[in-house]
Image 1 (cartoon, rainbow over the protein chains, first blue to last red):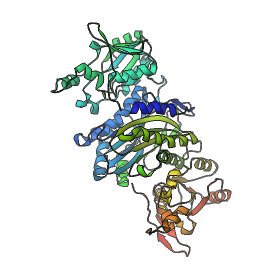
Image 2: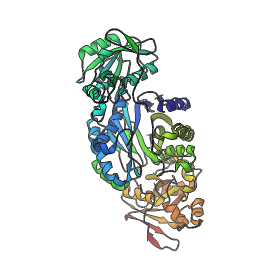
Image 3: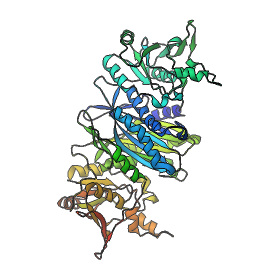
Length: 305
Length: 305
């Protein structure tokens, strides 16, 4: 539904002289009268859709609702500044639920220097709804967009993928510091974060950049959780399939010019590993190459909103 | 519930060097590294709480969800710049509902020069949820706060009050232009907008300013809608009571130094009437004086979240 709606909406929205980047990336870019630019993003999480309150630790839900926004700012290489938090709490237990959410949200805000700039709080007879909008500042190096990838660029990722549902989707570290460091020290062409799924989010870069991508199956860093999920009774996916389609890894996908990628991978400047998993191509489409050299079309998979 | 929760939350939130104003006003104020300051506010509207979708025109719901945020920016005398729109749509009818909302939202955004800077869209089996965060810029004249009222200041309001439920709560004009003009040309001490109710929102100014207020009953501009509501069968409130407690009038309450108030009321620089309805007092509390001179304690009434 979301893709169809956003496609319609993109056609409806007029341009605006102060909107430097609108719908279609991880966040929007606004320009101030001073000429400074800020980045704005927003995520809404609903009980029963994005989490199941009765099966979760409340503070982790609060933490995640802010963390997903910080991940969007990271994908733009923006320094987080503030968040506004809107809550509709279940009436029966409103105060306790609200407190639990903030118990997870506030430490993450402190860790990343995010000011909680108010919001809106109400209650109703329906399930918990959390909506957070986050604002960040761009550095002198400017933003990382989805749209800058060029044929020949290396596809480089942070961390590993798959099986985040086993717990990592709650406890992940938004790659804010990593994105700022990489954008500062290296010449990067494009970036996004993996929320929907590695293959689906990669396709967002290729779509916005007007190129394609060839993945090397053996190079994709598969998380231990993906192996654990694949080994579970009744699971019909391989660990690689989990890595490509599960989503909510909240790692970065980067498009890096080849010589810069060699330097970056040699440096390994982050605490989390950087891995080259393929190459952007001039021909549009997504492919995956298996160790024997056999190429297959890769159907982007992940969470479709 | 909201008051109790916000009181708890205010104790939990640490200060932040870039947060010039946090919870407790109509919007928060953030400072950029450039020194520029912006204003951020957020409102969440839920089907069944803030509107009843099946009994409404969809575009009016979309319009209102942005208009309430613009009213908050107006109360700070901020120039609206952008909004991020997060929607959780009812799955059964998601696309049609989303389109209807934007049909009302986009013309208002265009009217006030607001860039729609993306957002988040999802769907679920629950009722419609709309969460909008709006960003504005302060002018050289700085913000209007709730906290600046001084004893002796005149209480001045735009427009008239009561019975907005008959339709005005959907069709009101956020007092953005009015607030900017008044803040530019006159020396004002404090302001807020009337969302909860005239008496309750007035009490927000007195609480934040550490003062009290004395209203003149005969001076309160009572809307025709308030008379209409009071005349309805089964209604047990007077038109004045409707004016003082109904809320969602989205007019401005201003604290104006007495000599400046005389000039302002004489000028009447707006298309909407400006009326003096009372005086801020050193003694804390709210009172209302009837034509004969009898004073009564006024219990702040309005929509308690």
